[in-house]
Image (cartoon, rainbow over all chains, first blue to last red; front, top):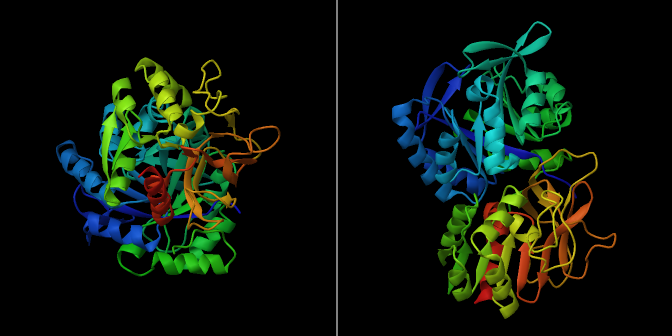
Length: 254
Length: 205
């Protein structure tokens, strides 16, 4: 009897359609968010993340409408984010049906936003997304969709974020994202062992073995992937059956 | 049958509405003591801070009407904070009083575990749970909380129909006459959650 390791598909949208970045740059269309949400809900996904990677002001109403439609399909938790800058932005996303809000660039610019969101919605609803890129012997926090470097060390930032009230860390390896060469086990383990909140590993997933590694060696509480699920390369059900066969605790769909 | 959802600004109220809608059930939001008094079945959703829930109930004058409805035998389902509110008080807001319908206190989950307790965890259920009818012991439900009512050690055990272990064993399902409460989120717990909600609807009908 214990907490299951979670498998979380992620829908990167331009507000309306699902797209997926390879190394955060080249984008191609991957489909309709509502249809994908329905499929993952039925296949046994443990949660769903929907991100607005365009995050432009004029597209915001479209993204909120996407959240509403996706939420209507789900009997599992929904996290939404991308371009959230203020408490009001977060309220709109929650009102549209998200259970959790993820913030990234805005949290780096205004760390107090983490506390504000946590006070308003509870820490279980605040996911601090950290995009980390290896730089010599440490991992640097990147913002603005992985394009802008900061001086922040990813491990210290994760600890600070948890202290300010983030209830979860969504940790993306910018080096691995889109490469399908496996999650960054070293990065994830370094952060997961330092912070006392759950860590979702992201970036680089391709094979079921990658998920086994990130749970066992990376100490991740959850693992997130996008294109391998969208493209049908990996079914969630088969992935969970594999993990269960490796004695990794997962929730098997009935 | 109409199910009344107590609306005091809880974040998960729309999720509960959507889950019941999928089951084909009509719901209404009630936010006044008159609304609570007229309800034929009540759900108290909740997620976030215990203090926010208790303060909202007192601000809106809902405490007495809620206790009154429960004492009259109106079928009641508390979800997450909605379970915690039934007990005496909580370490999360030590200055406030709970609804004090059930004995026991809400305490922070302890031990060397990450908080919040977030994700899918297994129930250890006892025979005779009406909410968990048709759901096997060991089924997974979705939890998102840092506080809970500890099980055992002098705390109430009689009405506890299922527990979960995370930083110690805690009350996951409690049932007493018309009172039903769960620490997890059935509205986010996939098929098992839908089944549990269906069981409550059948009891309430």
